[in-house]
Image (cartoon, rainbow, N blue to C red):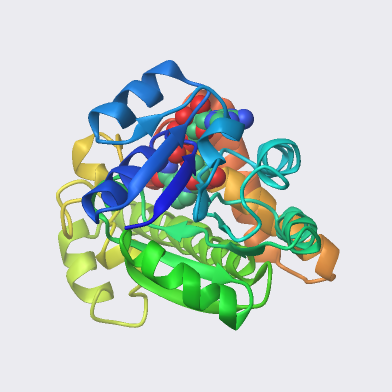
Length: 291
Ligand code: NAD
């Protein structure tokens, strides 16, 4: 059992912290939201009124926060220099590669080991302890992070040095955004050409058009396995979060001088979809754009 501080107990962090408690850890929780803290207390966490109090005496600090600016300010103001320098720092938020490296550099300069460990999998996977973690950091930091992350996920993969977890996450989600749009426009065209959509699925899911977006998350209601399409495009992975990840991918591509025309078009289409008031809808709902 380790004493683990957990910062950010929202949709994702709430379930993750609960799984650390179930694995026998002593979880010291802080969130700005009283509601999130009350849920954490119900799930067996000890709650605190500030980050600084929550990290006192911690052997590890896990954060699951909305964006890079918040991660940067929380670590700079209230984690680095406040948690014991022996504490392992793990940021599981999805943030830009540059900020992840900046925060990790500052932590290392102050004597901490830190990893970026963003996740694949949504709220159900966070609650069920079946997330996939992509981890950036040294071999030594990864070895310490692995058992903590394993209590919250089904797979923990060392992606490389500092920032590599975030790099893997945004490259993966850039594929996901583009393949979902490709799948949606193909189903919409198939329908306009008079094809029965179940028949098209039966063919394409066994042919070279197959992808995760088609066979694990089909955007057409009643076709393929159960997915948010069967639930009015509610639940699942919100289009606004897909847009956030595509924006991070575009920033990273610009800084690396990479040409990403499909990712760029996916970002434009998700931006238009979100601006039309659909940001809260599951990202597969973008099929409505093409129907
Ligand atoms: P969320 O908004 O539900 O939770 C974030 C929590 O952080 C909130 O409870 C908020 O009150 C808290 N918070 C904000 N600023 C804080 C501060 N300064 N100190 C303490 N707490 C603070 O968001 P979420 O859906 O849980 O997402 C968290 C992260 O996980 C994001 O980076 C997101 O991109 C990533 N992610 C989300 C999903 C998903 O399906 N929701 C999937 C993969 C990755």
